[in-house]
Image 1: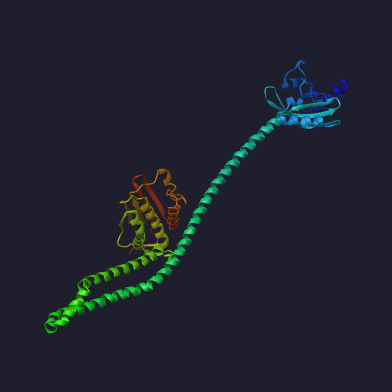
Image 2: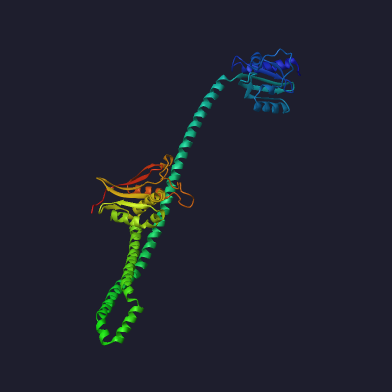
Length: 430
């Protein structure tokens, strides 16, 4: 150990005097200029492990935590004499137990002297602070999870609102197109229907004349055989008998086709009714029938029958276009979920304070784990390209906007029943 013992004793004594007021148990560590421990006080010996002096000196960094060992090593490398403290140093017992010492240290030519007291109170405060920080962290974690759930719910609502907005925009565009198409088709359609009716009447008049000539043909044969033969030849060439039977049938078929076109245009207008976005009093039976006729191509394509159970008439105060769309989405889903040869049953069930529109099928059904998700936007079990998962979500939004609900019961392999339940506030029975 370098330096005169008296000098070292004086240094240690001055540090001990400074620390007497702090605690009766003072830790003292003395190193040589290289940082190797050459002297320890009694409490320090107990804390850092007893030494009988037979083992080689150990560097002070061996008794400290990694970060504090690095700091002390840097201090030893600094030139000159200085005094530092008080500061906290973290020692490690040979058993691995750490403990903290509030330390004053002095560096001189003969080495380093550290003197201090164990910070029991500081340890307690640090423990309390750690507990507080852990509690704050747990509270922050819970708050983060709550805000995450709120964000997820808000995002879901935003997606639903976006889907409904897109639907409304599409329906608005469809309504404008429907109105234009209906106007453009109705005028020439009315003209063609009128012409077809006129041709039917004219044909009756023409064949009335032909029949009158036929009634006089025997007399013509007696008085003018050549004229009679000419008339017979012309009748044979024109296949007058076939014309007499086929022309009325063709005119009737044409009239049926024109009536079908008129009905399709009327159904499309009843179905969309986007010019009637506000709630109004409508015949719900008429709206449902038009909606089902509009789905006729899908029904034929799926090979499924639709059975209906409606009262003669039932009026409801509602937004007809949106409600038609909701019912259409449910029926279309039922048709797509049905096996060829199956059936979809659509019922209108008036009750005391509500009306139920029931759509039931005997198709594939919905797995139990998916029942709670069928109304989520963009959820679908259909193959790619056959659906985007908005139909039932839109139906749910439409029904909710009417103050109603949609109830669902399904069993895999047995089919699904969906009930649109609407309140009867404002309804009027026909």
